Structure formats: C-alpha cells, structure tokens
Image (tube, rainbow, N blue to C red; front, top):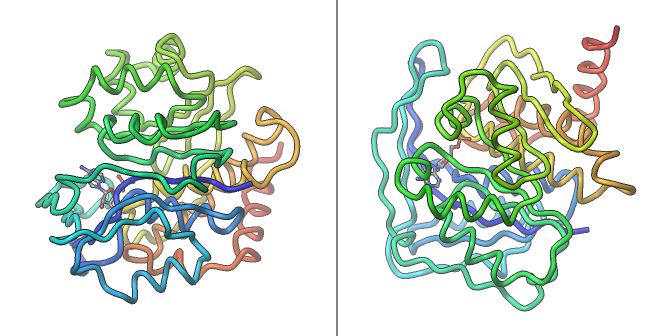
Length: 299
Ligand code: AMP
C-alpha cells in the first residue's frame, strides 16, 4: 500500500563544527519520503521553486517517489539554515526563507486522494488540514510537528490532533504541549487530545510509543559518529510509516517493528550531511542494523 507524504521540500544549508554544506536537498517531506521508499511506494506532496536543482528531482526519482503532487512555482524554494553545537544535539536556526511556501496550497492529484496511509510531515498545521480535507477515508493518518507551530498555530494543531490516528513529536515539544516534564504523564495527556497512538522521540535516546497495546520503548541505534542529525526525526517517522504501509496484518501488530525500522533509517540519516547517506543505503544494510538492535536489546 502507498504512503502519501506532505511536508516541506527544502534547500538546507547546514553548519556543524567540522563542516559547512550549502543548499542540500532537505525538508521534512524529502527526508520522510526517502525513508519510507525503502518499504513502500511513496507519493510526495510539496512545492519547489525555479531554483530547485534537477539533480534533486532525479534523487526522488531514483527512489521511485511519485512526483505528480510536487508543484514547481515561480520563485525560490524554501530555504532553511541551521548550525549545530559541538555536542551535535543543540541546533540554532540561522535562517528561514519561505519562498514559494508563502503562497503554497497543496492540491492533490485525483489518484493521491485514496492513498491508505498518510503522513503529515512537519509543515504548518493549516496545510496539514488542507491535505486531510482532500483525502478519501485513509486507513491510517500520522502527523509530525515542531515547536514553531506550538508557538504560532496552537489552535490549528489542537484541531488536527482530533483527526489523527498517530501523533509523533519530540520530548521538548511534548513538554511544551502538556506542561508536563514527565514523559509518561505527557503521553496520557496527549491521548486525551485525540490520537490513539502517541510517539515521543528522544533523539539519541530512542523513542516511546503509547497505544492500545500499552507502551513500547524503541531503542536508537548506537552511533559512534554523528555527522549531521538534520532530518533524523523525519526519517524515523517516514521509515515507520513506510514499514506500516508495507506490512500485512494489523497496525497494532506491526507498529513496534515499524518504529525499529524507522529508528534504523534515522541512524543512517545522521551519518551524512542532509540526505547524502540515506540515499545510498540498501535494504540489506537496514536489515543488518535491525538485527543488531535486536541482539542489543534482547534479555
Ligand atoms: P528535523 O531535523 O527532523 O527537525 O528536520 C529538519 C528539517 O526540517 C530540515 O530539512 C528543514 O528543511 C525542515 N524545516 C525547518 N524549519 C521548517 C519549517 N518552519 N517548516 C517546515 N520544515 C522545516
């Protein structure tokens, strides 16, 4: 089954203590789409400007990502720039140029409206609503978000939570949303806002799921060297949704494994700038890391 993914399609300029890389292929939807494409067919919905390089389109195509929902508009592609501190966890946004995102309204091609799995990757909640409005009874809808939307679009986000099956956010966002420092109290409060499944990401400490079958602690793959963690969260949720879409049987029966696959794809993402490493990974390498995680967490 296919996954429809909407989110940002961006040019990212990333600075770490060791290197600086301008105008890489980035954006929440790009990372999520490449991650999901290892497991299931992906339909990408987004917008780019006239400056979007042809080689990035070819990268999407290389991953067999369906691009009928990717608009190209006059103007500049969304450009985001960030800088990491030496610990590679603390990140500062240096620049956000909305470009063509300023006037973007996602319009889904007819064939996209019946996609069974929908990932509303990080983008303004109003646009996430707009995509959902056009869908025909999807089987499973997941959304991701960021602190910006908690600050500037909270009412839209709260309305969105009531339309989701699953909500994925990081630990500081969960704390901001609920006012709770304790992760497990926060999970309970977020369920009350709507979603049946809640996943809280904790960066290099893994993630926690809360759902109808209880809770699950998903490990992060232990990396010795992080090159650039940009997009790791998007890769995690993209991999998870791709795996769920490919799986036979129930969501409940597959979601824990799906998180582990998401976690592994996210680990590859961190090993290169932007999408440079993720786009070179093979399914066999993913399977090897899944087995390693299994060995590491078995007792
Ligand atoms: P993450 O590292 O998972 O937080 O995701 C980083 C990605 O988010 C980058 O590729 C950016 O292009 C994208 N991004 C940054 N700011 C925004 C924003 N305001 N809206 C949508 N996407 C964004």
